Structures are given as C-alpha cells and as structure tokens.
Length: 298
Image (cartoon, one colour):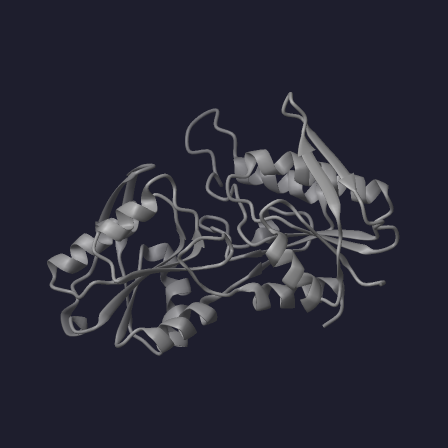
C-alpha cells in the first residue's frame, strides 16, 4: 500500500484501526515496552519510508505517554517518513495558559513547542481554550481543532425531551449557543468562581419559563465534576427534574464519576475522545475528516 501508515500508542488501537480504514491507509505496527529501570523501548516494525505517518494518542494523563510518543515520532522521521501527524482526540496541557503567579511555567506554551518539534501537523477535538482563542497562538505547525457541538446537539435532540442547555460559565457561551442551535433548544449560562482545583462557587440563573424542561449541563471537560455538581444543586433547589450531564472529554479525576452519579443526574454522556463507560457520542467520523484534509485526500 502507498497510503498513510496509522500507528497507535497503547490504548488507542481500536481508534487507529478505524481511522486507517477511513483514510484509506494501513495500520502500522510497532513494539513498545519498558525496561526494568522504567526507560522506554520503541521499535517501528512497518517501514515508513516515503509515506505519511499518523500517530494516534489521546493524551489524558500525558506524562508517561509523551516520551514514547516523542521517541516514536523521532524514529519515524529518521526512518524516512514523509510527514508525521499527531491525532490527539484529547489534548493535554491547555489549562496553564498564563503565569498566574510569579515563577510559574506556562505549560500550554511549553507543551505546544514540544509537540511542534515532533510533528508536521496535529488534529485534536475541542481543546480547552480560555484566554487563548486559537491553537495557532500556541502551535507552530498546522493544528486543527475539530468542533463537535453539532454532534452533541444532535444527540440531545434525539434523546432528551424538552431540553434546556445549561453552560458552566460565560466563557462557554459561544460553544453553548452552537449546541443549543443544533439541538433546537433554549439555553442559559451560569456564572462560576473557582477557588481551587476542587472548590467552585456556581450561580445558575433562575429557570423561570424553563422549569418544565430537562436541563442538560454541558462542558468541554468533566474533571473533578465540582462545577457540574454545584450547578445540579442549584437546579434541583429550583425544582428541576434530574438533569443530564454532558461533556466532550471524559477526564473524570479520582472519584469524580461516582460523585457526579450520586449527585442526582439522570445520565452522564460523553464522546469517545477518551474511552469511558459514559461514551455515547462517536466523534471518530469528524476526526477522520480532519485527518483526510491534512493528508490531502479530501
């Protein structure tokens, strides 16, 4: 075959299999293991010479994943790969996008610089953008952010009766508007004050004429779950029915999924950027379209 070679970092094999089919490519084979001292061994078992190589690696818990990814990209380059692309359905290190206190590393910039040295292009899904409006501000390579508001909105329209979309904070308004438009539903936006990693003050507007609707709390990431739990408490205090909680990325820090389940939700729904039992929405076709564009195959 002469199409792209699609390589999977551990845990991404099924995604890579389907992506290879979607881009008329071939699954590349490699060998990875850790030496007893914790160092990584990487061997490329399918020659990449003269071919595009696509590396699939969702980057939840990125620290132990980054060095094997870097070693693989470097080996592929040395073995003659034409171009190297990284597909990271979940992109890490987007939180620290400024120096909040003296001496802090701006890790979103540092991580972007590292990835930009490894690859010729990158595709990701709904990165956690706040003060940064575009990945172009961080990455020196073409970096495509696939937005899946339409997929979330379509799921809501099909599965939720009389939905009311609830955004977590003012920064989410534009994103929430897109989901609400795709769902054909009204929306409201909360205000949020974060006091720490796991402490949030959430203020949800009055439901008013929307009291009979089913609230659908949406966010790009569920990590600790504290933002959604605070919103659930405000909604239930106003007499709402049990809400649906929805996010693109199922990060779920320790105990977050259980805490959110216990908070009185009807269901928790995420996309499959990170494999999790809550996955209900398939974003792989959208990712494949982005990858096909980078590979120049339409």
